[in-house]
Length: 244
Length: 244
Image 1: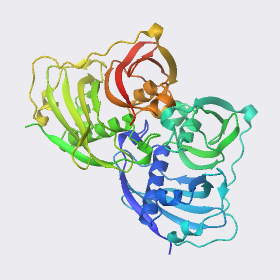
Image 2 (image 1 turned 90 degrees about the horizontal axis):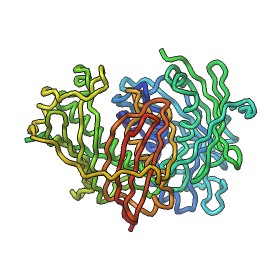
Image 3 (image 1 turned 135 degrees about the vertical axis):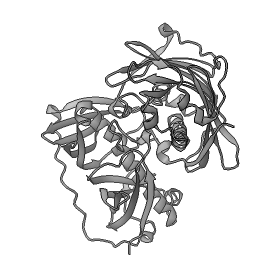
Image 4 (image 1 turned 45 degrees about the vertical axis):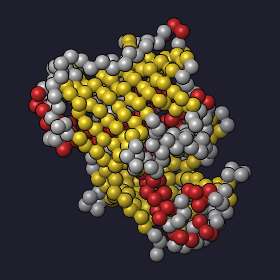
């Protein structure tokens, strides 16, 4: 039986947007925090993982959002690992309201990256066994993300700022959401909310990088790509609905 | 006896910088959250204050920082009102570590702004009496902030982004710290930490504004000014020391 970890969280004003709803960046920040707490509880703190000279890197999120938590609302974040294969580990997150209604679900895929080579390495059994999840055959398929046609896309530059950088000298990848959505503009963002989002991360950004944020939008679907001079860093596809 | 409110806070990874220390922006965010909790406890929630068609606006912070809280560290945030006169209310904040050592102190000055006129109005007795603080004669003097000589200053533009905007359609003023410090550069910021900071706010920024961030630096003192096309928004003076 896979280990489950849950923790309450009260949404603060500084985690919220113009509509007093939790931002997607903050929702993912808290989700990751909750899985770090589970790691600690199972004896797999960052320090233990780093002792193998590797670190976990997320490669994909698939999110479904019924509604975002509101400022001052206390919700419950939960997480569990769901399986692993030779290279990938899969983990789910969820957010429930006080009545137990599911507000959001996130499926995710992770790999171990070697600090020595900065490349992906095979899963290390000691780093997955405590989660009590099955080894699975094959690779879990996430929904296809349709590419942005860069030649036809709107583009805006976002220089990486000092406070975007974490202690590993990389950009916390929730900032990609800000870069992807900001130039949809306040008129669109304040009249629409996210129904679902799929994002795939390919390369990390670091100090002195400039993120080029490209998007195309048709009806209620936006496609996004973040690039640097070195190539593609992430791409995403988002379904929106008009706010009620 | 003035009412005091305290609350523990465990610093998370996403509140921290490249040195695993809480960012100044997040420290101020949590301080303000704690004073909102005191407001709620004393029956002076935002809704009650807004019922008078006014809101509290900070005009000045004076901060002294012995050391910033570290990631995962649990500290105690405290706050108390310290006095008021015809127009200004004064409030202190502090952050203590688990041993009761004071890590940071913030003195602040606040005014009531009319939602109808967007101008300052006289203090409303019902909105200060619950804090049980004395009416004081005269105005508390904060340390002088030496002006930036704009013609000689380094300058960089920071366009206001969607996620900088709060539910009042204004920029959360902690973002000014990011704009002020970011272009000091990673070499300076990762080798220095803040000893003290004085900031005075003059005008708010809103959607579609571009913040021009100007600074001059001599030895271990930096002076900053944020302007828009409409004039000065804030100015600050910061004393730094080299990290140990």
